[in-house]
Image (cartoon, rainbow, N blue to C red):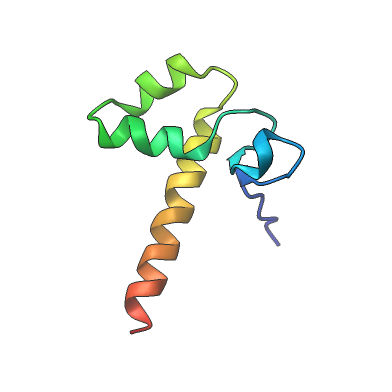
Length: 74
């Protein structure tokens, strides 16, 4: 049975509770800002080497799953 590990968490002791990538102080919103601005995933990862590719991809997949679930429950 696979274990689900969330790539993002929020802790009031870290960045005032801003959702960040686990094990980092990099806000999850930063990934979305990069992509929205036209930058590639590689550009984001180069700028924030403490975030792994697996974390970034998992965060995007989680966001996609939540969006699809929300849209299909209407």
